[in-house]
Image 1: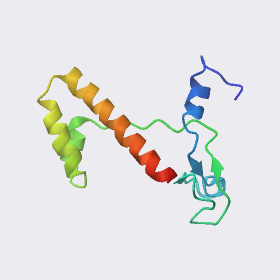
Image 2: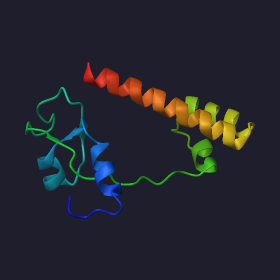
Image 3: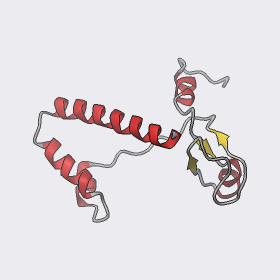
Amino acid sequence: MANNNNGNLEAEVRGNRGILYCRACLHRHGELIYYAHCQSQCAVCRSALDPIDFPLPAHKVPAIDEVLADSAGSFWLKRALRGALTRDPVDAANDAEVLAKILDARCRHILRS
C-alpha cells in the first residue's frame, strides 16, 4: 500500500476486511466474486480464498428515473424511493443512510455466523 492519498486508499482497504474473493477467478476470468469469511474455497474453481487487499471499484449510482423505470428493479426499493421523494431531501437522505448502516451490519453479522 505505498500509494496513499491522505490515507483514503488504506482506509478503504481496511473497510473491506472480512470480505474474501477468489484471486484465480479474478485473474483468469475477470470476475470478482465475493465470499463470506466462513467460506474456505471458491464455489467455481475450488481455489483458496483471499481477503480483499485492494479498494473495491466505485459503482455508478443510477438516476431516480432509471430506478423507477427498471422493470426488473426491486418493488421494495421503488416504493421506498417514491416515499422518500415526498419528504425533505436531507431528512430522507439521513434516514436512508442510517437504514443502510443497520442493514449492512445485520448482513455482516449473518455472514459471520
